[in-house]
Length: 141
Image (cartoon, one colour):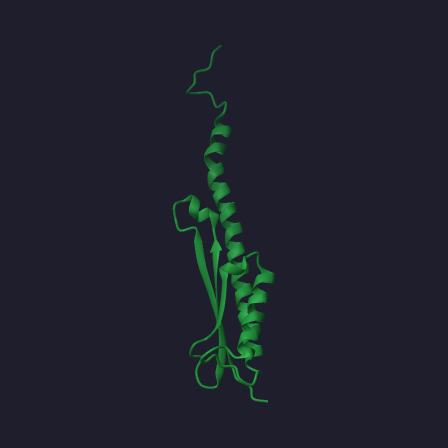
């Protein structure tokens, strides 16, 4: 007895799997990319926090007209910490003292350009710029 094509369910599971697979892969890839972005954000926050704490304790923390040795060292510390905790290249990370942190305060700002391949696949800009800043009260010892 022959079965008609309309009644047969042979291959239905494979067809459903083929239809759902791209969506599942996009969700899994998106979860990994989001985790990586959150890791970079946490590294930026930790880097500028550590650099700003160092900067708050140096005698001349201000960066006018050129960075003082303390400010340059704080920027270097923050940048080094960010690079060692992420897989970013040095060209993707920028760290600088805050231009106007307010009276009696110092601070740092960091930006990183993170490549997100999944966005490029769907026709969006393939990089996201993440930034973080931290401000500390200047401590005079």
